[in-house]
Image (tube, rainbow, N blue to C red; front, top):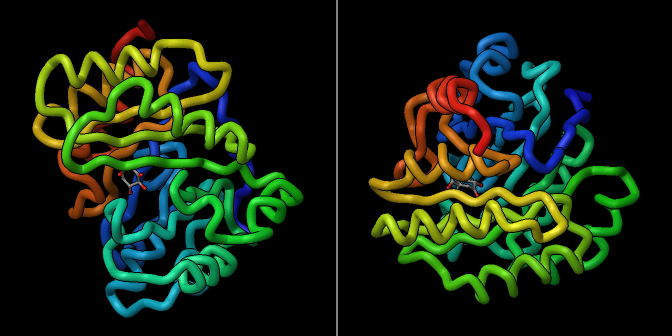
Length: 236
Ligand SMILES: O=C1C[C@@](O)(C(=O)O)C[C@@H](O)[C@@H]1O
């Protein structure tokens, strides 16, 4: 068992360090990882795309690091084509060590019985949505948030391409509105860094940066730098 303790409190911004490749994961040590972030994301699809079949031995060296596991489908940024059965089996490999599990809102019905297993083991569900083209409308975000809530998610997360300052403001506004559940909003693209810091200031619970050399989304901060930046500004 690695570390299953993860406190997701609305208004407390945690930094998530996401391993962008197998080399970064292999070469990581618990101390440096915990210095760079409070939670580490392991993208099982990224490992599988490199030919590394998800297996507990790949992360056993990260003793004490809360691990968030993600098996991303291609349509939402996954590194390879995969079937729901494949992604489910990757996630099942990780259950024993998971401090949290990320499943797309669009995939919530793809894994019958899995959400109940997460609930039974007290593993928080992060229900996510990604738009690599543009920023969704507020009703669209709300619709997905309600699906996440109905599924029992601990966090609704949305990452969207931001093209204009108005897009950044739209995400930050959604972040600062009280919807009665923890949220994590973030932009992608050249305006991503400012949007991520702004959403953190408005209480985004999970704020993603990369560990190693490869970002897992366009415009991500390096995780240590993001953690430092979040710690350097006041909550808004
Ligand atoms: O969903 C997310 C957020 C993310 O897409 C980002 O925008 O930083 C990075 C992904 O690895 C993670 O699973």
